Length: 329
Ligand code: XMP
Image 1 (cartoon, rainbow, N blue to C red):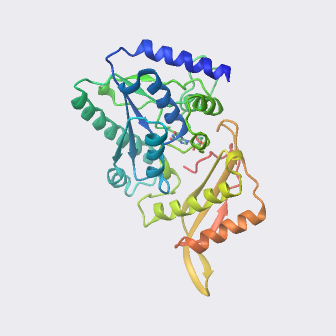
Image 2 (image 1 turned 180 degrees about the vertical axis):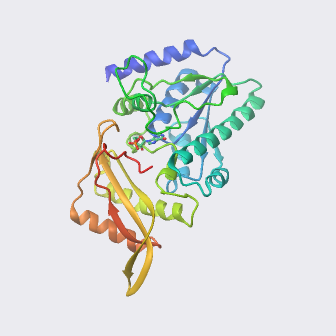
Image 3 (image 1 turned 60 degrees about the vertical axis):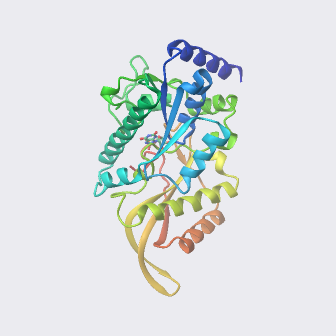
């Protein structure tokens, strides 16, 4: 793709001329396509002066930490430190039900972990890192705050996406946002040129606040996170097995803090309901729900109710965006 090759060459040149020869750059990897492509691009430009961190915030999906770390290390040879901060995040989220509050807490905690990483790094390399890489895309920018002259009119914040703005004020890091003008499909093309594995590039988007916006209400209540991880894994794996993963933009489960009555093995149960959401989209700005075949859904629902303890009801979200957002919170 000549256009994306040009974008890549141009970005590499820009980064090389911006970052001095003895300056260091840090990057937070989320495990998603965007930050991974951004980091791989910057790594190509400045090599080992890039330092990445991957934070396990306790809100990751089933086996996600192991899966992404193995890609970073074995496939991409990116220099990544993995920080397990799950206790720290979950203790701060205890009792919090308001969606915006959850996002703010997660954003703040993330900054604290990141700040700590930067300070430790500074001690190690004897120099303060001067730049921060972010995998911000064009839709993130315009949904959080439309850039002047973009022709976009809405000026309110729809949701506080934690990867836009909100940086530690005293860190004085300059931003490198090589994907700021690109849409998702363009980022995937760029990643492909950079030899990011195809299976990784095709990963569905995943929100920065992770499963916190998919467990409605208090994330720490009961074993909600564990139940959600299992349901989500069954659903997404079934989609992969059916060969549908690549035509669906995003598919995931949502944990509902709702108990319903069921009957399982001649027993009356009073346990949790979960929701499934699968959408098609061009850029995440608008979305349509995906129409599964009946047999597929019957099979998935059986798998979920038979294998996940504490779930006796499954509903499907059939709302477009708008009026609904992709995530439930
Ligand atoms: P919504 O729910 O706003 O989501 O319709 C649009 C797309 O953005 C993802 N999303 C986020 N991504 N940080 C992110 O990096 C966030 O805080 C965040 N919130 C939503 C969502 O998964 C969908 O792809």
